Image 1 (cartoon, rainbow, N blue to C red):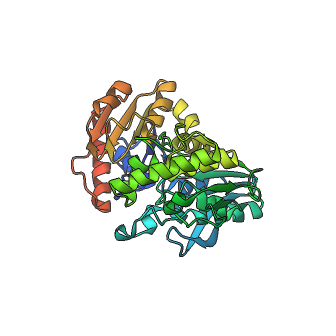
Image 2 (cartoon, rainbow, N blue to C red; image 1 turned 135 degrees about the vertical axis):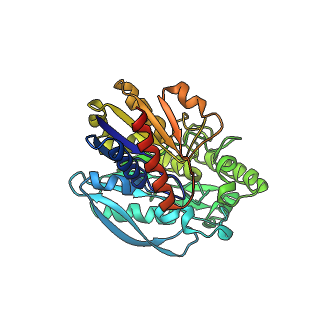
Image 3 (spheres, helix red, strand yellow; image 1 turned 90 degrees about the horizontal axis):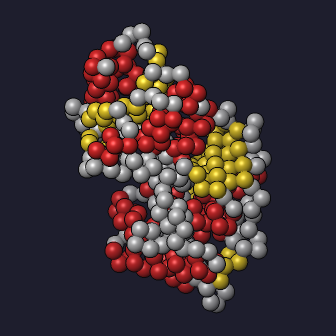
Length: 362
């Protein structure tokens, strides 16, 4: 029996590899002769760069840059000398986890530090960038990042607008004359399909988790639309609402391609080669529900497994609303934990026991 494991993180409890290793131990308990390979899984959000790191023959570079609230933070990125590629994770420099709950305010947070990381990577020889943009604390449509690269966002008096989304209300002119980085090959890793503006846009769908009230969401949506129209771009293009509009800025001003974060991770790790010769595939996440089949990482694993006619099982903390959609999509079976918990050690034991039970029943 050969099994391939690719678990997404159980947010708040387990990282991707912690969950994967727990599944591996459970399988080995039930089937000691099994050959089990564990791959990391991420979708462009927090932990994506670390998941990729062991597979790209790169080094970690640390840089002191501007954090989401304008104070210095020590952030790092991965650089592969062999491919001249830098892997930058936005969450490490402008992420929600860097801000206390009571300090979250998308009117004020900035992406300036992301631009500083890009500048450092390019100065260090990077010719390609993979920018993972999930888990951000910002709604400033990537203007801070662009300003760090030389762009000018001006009010009607010719003065620079304030940092954060609040500065957008005064935006009158955008000057990209001195923008650097347009010659760099950039791929955006994101599994968010929301547009920049509209009822399912960046402000309304993700603003509340970043500290925005309903009134703030309405204001920011208006400001973002003005920003897009001032720049001459479509505010309703799918995928441009990721990370508060960071994907909009990277695509339209720097020529980036927007790709599936999970697919980028799977291609980088080479998981498909192992799936081609395995007997069973196991994936999962903290909650599997109707949203899982809308492009989330475990669904991408399912598609890969189905491509090679392999049975794909899901292990999840809980079965959420509409989990039946996962079964309709092709999961052979989905097994919830008997004891879902946020405690890491208890979650590890529960995942291990669930995997053992699954293999005893197969």
